[in-house]
Amino acid sequence: RRCLCATATIITMLSRQVATAGARVGAARGFSVLTAAEEFPGLPTTSPGEKKGSVASVTTLPSGLTVVTENASLTSTVSLTFPNAGSSSEGSSEAGAAISSRYLSFKSGSGLSSALIVRNIEDVGATPFSSAGRRGATVGFTAARENAAFIAPLLATECSFEKWDVKEAQQLAAAEATDATSNAQVSLSDQ
Image (cartoon, rainbow, N blue to C red; front, side, top):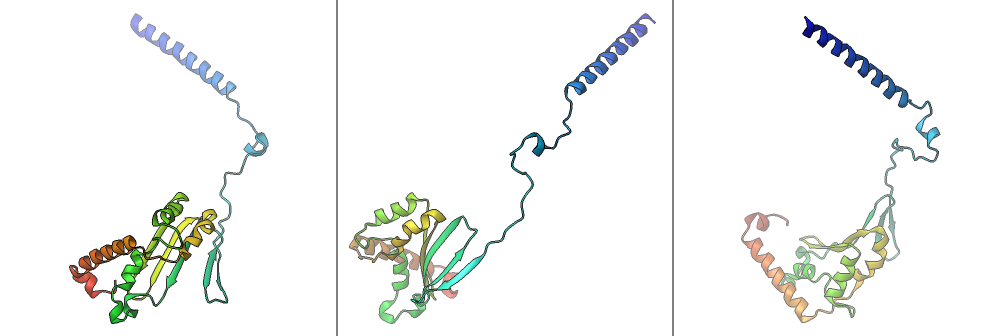
């Protein structure tokens, strides 16, 4: 009986301490009746704003060049597309010209070395690309929009056909041709 009575007393005492501590915490932690904007003026809003879609515009210059711009993109892709520069437009004496041209992209030209051209493109974080297929060829880069205008002139370099660049392009084209002839899917498709 003594043990039961002592246990009841301890439980009662602990209950009072918990209730007292709870009351103190609630009192010390009073909540403000002001909104966050009233309590902290100048605080930016946290609710999302209305989404704005990107608007693209297409302009054709007197030279026939088509320029497509978009106002909401963080990156810019600048490309030159040659619609009739694919392998289907090659004559018998030009066989392999499209694929070789693909590998001559960003090579020496206009008094600039391959290393200098690629270094300028990569220094601003741009990613160069080139492709050639049956119907056409494309060369270009993707960069942050503030850097695109700086490196765009590099697409207009006139290839100087340095012998080391031509030799490398021939080797890369030959390797791709070997891969293509060993794969029936590539040979029979329009790739």
